[in-house]
Image (cartoon, one colour):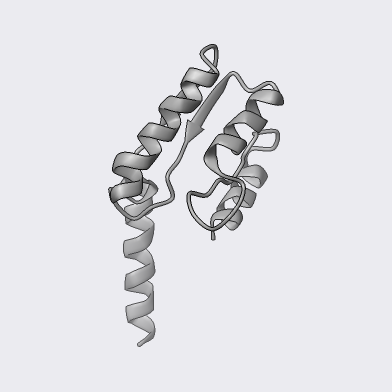
Length: 105
């Protein structure tokens, strides 16, 4: 699903650099993804947690990893966004999907 969202972002905004990163059991990890974007010339990076809520990863791991990346790349603006499911458009889309599915039952 994360790769599908990244592909959609690329289609909607051609030329936007988008990288997926993972915290467990998959590569690349966040540090590698950020380092790669910086090597490609990125001067500003937004980290979007693809989580449904503010669990341990979003509350503890991502702030620590983002701060470490900021220390490695002090001239790059690295911002950590709130989990994607906390965004109002995402909540509305989820509600619409539920209501649409209910209509099919």
